[in-house]
Length: 174
Image 1: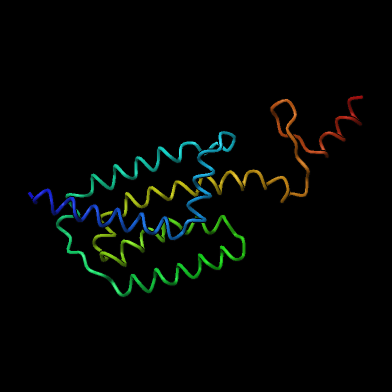
Image 2: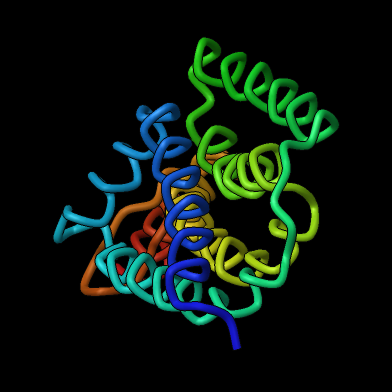
């Protein structure tokens, strides 16, 4: 058993690193928060996932007490590379890739600040954050599918119909 102060201190450091990463990548964080708070987006489960990931982080704190925490030069380099890639996606306006990179950036932030073992211990809690942008990207992908197929789809009585089907129905059934 470890002293509660040491366990709490290491957990607080890791949570602080994750919070700093979320603030540093604010455009992606703010897009997710907007998606969660929009009642028409279907992403209101995101706040529940954040709470669940926080609970998983707290549950991992006793294991984190056994791990020596030290700065990782390799983790810093990988974090810098992922930050550059994220910035390219930001400047290119590719929000989906920005959001999908956010969990990797959170993992690499802990890896850079506390080392591989600490990132591994918190990997499940951080990995849960992958569910956050995947729902957003999936919803955008489903909306884009009719556009990609070349058909214009619209909602009609709860079913998706295309103009091609409407033309066929008008020809056959009138």
